[in-house]
Amino acid sequence: MRRLRAGELLGVRVVDRYGREAGSVQDIVVRHEEGVYTVLGLVLGRSALAGRFGYGDSLEPPTPWKHLLGWLRRHERYVKWEDVIAVREDRIEIGVDHGSLPRRWHEAH
Image (cartoon, rainbow, N blue to C red; front, top):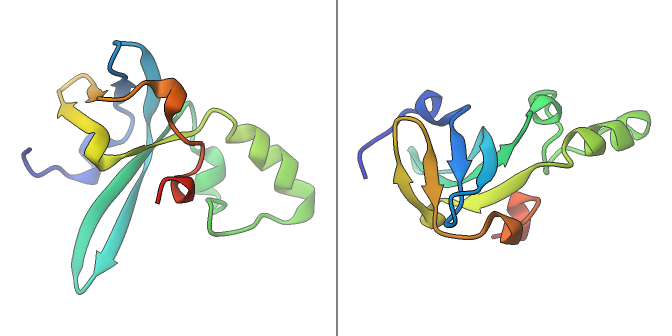
């Protein structure tokens, strides 16, 4: 697979192994070790508004916002980078059923 910039992946629609829509790429989960960034997976969904506020899986939102931000993230799914089988100009293809994808990235690692 060729080298990609993160901006090339954001917003791209994702289809599962059956050709069904799984969402679009809203965020990229990476690991940084010794100056090297490694892509672990992709956060899929309809919107990444909650995550862009900084309330992903590692930051707990304040109590009044917890339910609202959880509701905004209800469509999010996570796909491991190793399950990506093709990155095309108009879509990313994954080799798993979108119904089997976990809701949070930490559930997959």
